Length: 399
Ligand code: PMP
Image 1 (cartoon, helix red, strand yellow):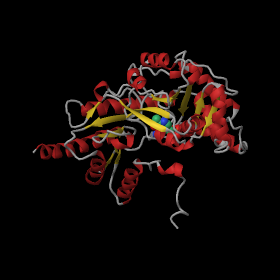
Image 2 (cartoon, helix red, strand yellow):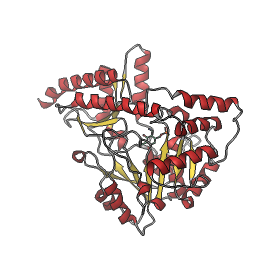
Image 3 (cartoon, helix red, strand yellow):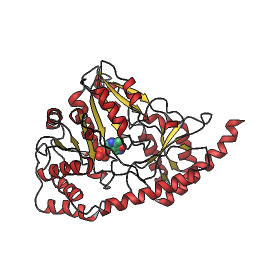
């Protein structure tokens, strides 16, 4: 029967989701009555703001229960285009340059399936959110991983990207603020990348899903707002992280119409449209009171500050500044067990769930991602448990 159950050849290179192992084991421990600190899930622990839920409920009650246009409902496309113009200084037509997607995930998939041919290369700075590479493999393309420097805060430097370009390069991925490092790309690096891409057919995929989660005085720059990049950039965004709407599965893809129309072609034969009445909720999020979003960001900022305070003055877990998103990416002593093992040990013995570095690309064997999207007390408690565990291990490894 083996052949009957064989996956398509396209799928054989696509890796299963690494984070699932931790996730499932954490759930099993919880079912057995243990209190687990969840540093593994990149998901706000807040409820979706009330006025957003009400708008979706009203739309459902009003009978918005049918397919919408493949592009999404017009008022939401308009709200997204206006948000991009206002917050990101880049203009798109709501008629044919913005697609409402089933989460930012779908936006990434549409962008890649619409543009990448078998054999083409996509430059992905690492550590990285794993989906880009797997979507590239689904398209038959080759991810080209570019390691970023931890001593430089994993900053995406133009030189590193430029050095990875070849005649086969079709796309460069920029995720800022970054999952898993929290690093925010500098406008100067985008400008340098723009110069180098000029005259080529290389696209830029700008994943801005964490754009509004930046702390202190840091500012996010949308790659498409760099004048020479606008026409070769596909912008991915969404409501999951900043609006606590991950389960709504709503995001967007925006770009020049010449590219976006191909993404729409994929959409027509896959998801068709996101649930129509939920799209009305998203209009309320983008157009209505922004205070709930800002309050959540303040709360994340406090958790981040608490985590950085707890980790200051020790070097068991070495973290970088992480100006955005809700992650800290920590390196630890390479004499200690590799991250896959350490993550399992931390879970079994300390009931702290983290994601091991290898989920985020090659060469990440002694690093873990800590998501501070849980309560302030869990942040403190989880880090204390981890540091205690590591300090018990450290002398043994040194011996
Ligand atoms: N991009 C990045 C960098 C992410 O971390 C995530 C979610 N983990 C997504 C996209 C997908 O977001 P959504 O839930 O909107 O599909």
